Image (spheres, rainbow, N blue to C red):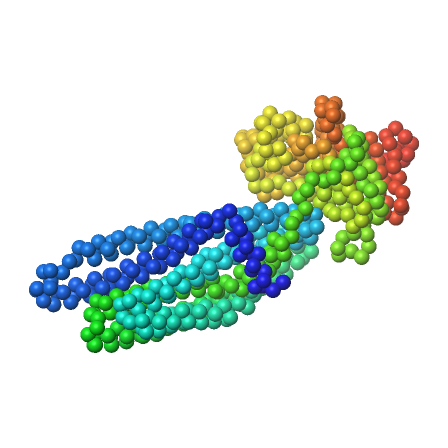
Length: 574
């Protein structure tokens, strides 16, 4: 998809948004601002020159009316200020609202199973798409279309004003000079700055990615002795961005000179025409001053559109990246439910990652019954986490079907946010009362820890749960999971990395919660599927399935059978 074609869905997004009237109002206010500014500067020039001419003789000075022009200048000043303020508020508010809608739309698209997995491997790219790329699109309306409309209006107004006060040939000549010179300056700016703006965008994305890698993986980089090398990459990316910024600044300065020269040429043409007409006695000096100053105000939109032209490369690159996502509809439909009595039904399901030549899982048939606690056991790398992702809807099948009820998941790496403890918990259930939060913390074995904190539930946490230990963060994530009303609960090695005592507390909490849910909510499905390779986790299960991609039929054993005990014995003690 070419960049200019990619810009079409972005323009359609602005046009078809619910803020079309506000966007149009902002554009009209921008036009009104420049027209009122032209009238203000023209009237001021006429007024000052007329006052000077009238003051040359006592007779004209006594009869000259200074009040009406003075009132007009004050009125136009107030109108211009109000129009400028209204234009800035209206255009920026509408743009931010449209871009907020775009972020929601893109986030929904990125959450789809076919996209989320790829973006999860490059989190810096996802962050850049949702922030810098979307921010670059504000230039489409704010710095391109709106000032272009103002420039067209000011050019027409200039031609009409000069045609009215001077003659129609002067109006056409000067109007053509303003329009042609303005278009030439903007086209030259886009041509010179296009490639540099793209390089600057790539350099900014690379810089952000290298900084995120350096900060997020600093422990591993230190252990591998690669931290210095990573910091050198950060500095190299910063130098690339700085070089692009310097080049853009040079181009912007050159464009500013070109715009100024365009204004000088047009002003010179207007002055020559006005001077000739003054010498011929067809107009007076005040009218000549009015015509010249009107022209100076007409060039204001060129200065506003210059920044949009400088960022055209970045804007079109962002449009090319985001347009394909806007033209596809994410699959947000509810999952197909399984037969009554089941919470999950995998029918001949296969999973193959896009970068892999071999399928991770092939022709899987697996059912999970209502109320059941199923453990997926087996060595690392056999596809247990892929099975959980399949059941959660985070992964699409290559072949086959997945019939499932809605699921809540506790992955190996828990995500806690820079918010209070209550805020992190209410992500699972926004309407949960404080009593429900304490019950979930009690079930997860964390109530005593939180109660001992000075602010208790209002205690703020840093990024990734900073302020809590690793085990406490894990139990807080578990408490959040226990609040979720989903009928299917997915756990991926829930006690990995915890000490024996804490792990036993967590497993007892999960077992007690599951037993209470099965008895207290009859008629509502409730099941647990857990990936594990530890005996302390698997012994709580009702059923164990040994995941082995090399076998077409997996070992399946229920609690109380010799096969169940044999599978437990194959797991790692703990």
